Image (cartoon, rainbow, N blue to C red; front, side, top):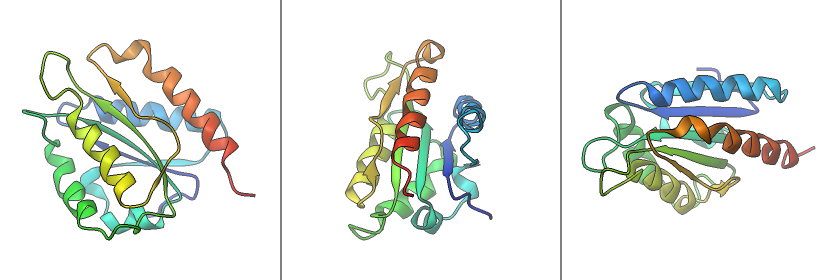
Length: 154
């Protein structure tokens, strides 16, 4: 797999919403002059995160606060990393969920926590999106790309 130098977008999904947002993120990145690649979480190896410079995690919550099927293995592998294994990585998390459930956006919250625990730098605060996310996720992405552009190492 060829990882892009600018941005790796990974998504965990059961119904396809996270994949659609990952596709949108790649388009928005291109509009900002940022080369991005996106992959389902079951299409990459956890060690790919160690090679990436910046990662956007887009993940839905499934069942009772669980990771989607295509995200669980990668999440477990990242949990097994040493404390500073991701110290060279900048990241942000877009979490999808439904406020009708007690563990709203739990999978995304878990991703945010584990990335920070393993030494990654939170470039942009996590956004927890309810089912009507269309109204506000684009603003979050625009803010993310401005921060990414401002944090590029020259």
